[in-house]
Amino acid sequence: MGTWSYADWKPGGERVSFGDLTFDSMLHCGNAHDFVEVGEGHYRFRSRVHLAPYAWRFLFTVESPGDGREITLEVADFNHEGRTPWHESATVHSLDGNTWRPFDTGRLQIVEWTPTGHREIDEAYGDATHIPYGVRYRLRLDAPRIWFASPTPFTLQYRDRLLGELVRTHPGAVEVSVVARSAHSETTGYPVTMARIAAPGDCRERRRVFVIAGEHAAETAGMYACEGFLREVLANPTWLQGYAFFFVPVFNVDGVFFGRSYFNVSPRIIDGPGVNLSATWAERPAPEQRDLWSFLRWLRPELLVSLHNGRHRRAMDQFCDPGPETDAINEALRRHVGFALADAGPPRTPARLPREAMDRGVAQHGFLTETLLLCRLPGMHTFRDSYVELGRRFARGYVEGLDAI
Ligand SMILES: [Zn+2]
Image (tube, rainbow, N blue to C red):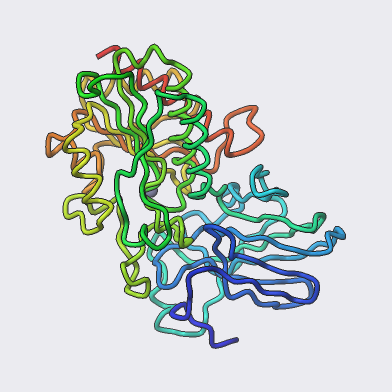
């Protein structure tokens, strides 16, 4: 066992070769490090970023002659609930970094995790519901470059291309602005951006809907659902007579940039695990929270939706306050979404954004939705398409629900 320690982690990824194979996590928003060859055709890497308490995400490429040989790739250090092959269903691979195909779960296997040998750090990793484990993937190298990821990436370049394209194709309807800056926005070049879709005039004279995703960095199903919600609004211009919409597809920009799974990144990267942006809205210790909160206090949305995604769920948990208006909205959602929607009670403490916004009179209705990371709607060939379609259905359900109250 080497002497590599999580404390040695450096931002920016790694590019490592073993013979005619090269693993490269230096791509935009890439994450995987400490690649080692542990046996004939068997390579292992780590996904936990520095001393982050949680890890279940990676993104890198494998370069090879593309001669069709098979290798075993093993992630050493995931931690989450579940630990069955089904819980790894969101693993994907790609030949171009754009179209991500599901990885056959018959070709993966759950194994013991591999500690680093630095006992103090290893023993502090995980908790009762985040037990460390490894996953072994059998990968066929039938192309010179294969992108490998879990789950489907939603990178900041993807976000910027998406919003840029929508501004160009819907001139006058979509407006993109910087709504918040994180500790690293200046150095990475990626602030928190927001798309506003509204008819001309004062948006505060219309009913305002605010949708946020990506408080947790690896929760890309929620981010794609936010994209779908946005696309569906653009497909229904009559909605803009009564409503104005605001979308933040990726809130935790630093976490996404540096390959984290949940938390943001401290101002000095080496200082501790960062902030759980979703659970600290009462104190708002992070600059991106303070910026967004001041915007929300100005906007005062009627409806605030925070899109997450469960890493282990089979039904969508919907956290919301009880009441007839909530019931009307959830009933409308159930008519549209195609997945079971479980009323999971009020948004939990510690302070979630919908909870805090409702308690402070900033939003009238708040919902925190755990969309599904591991399930695809019938007929959907990729997870990305399914996540986006779900967002479209959310849009129709929420608008129908709001129309009814
Ligand atoms: Zn989350």
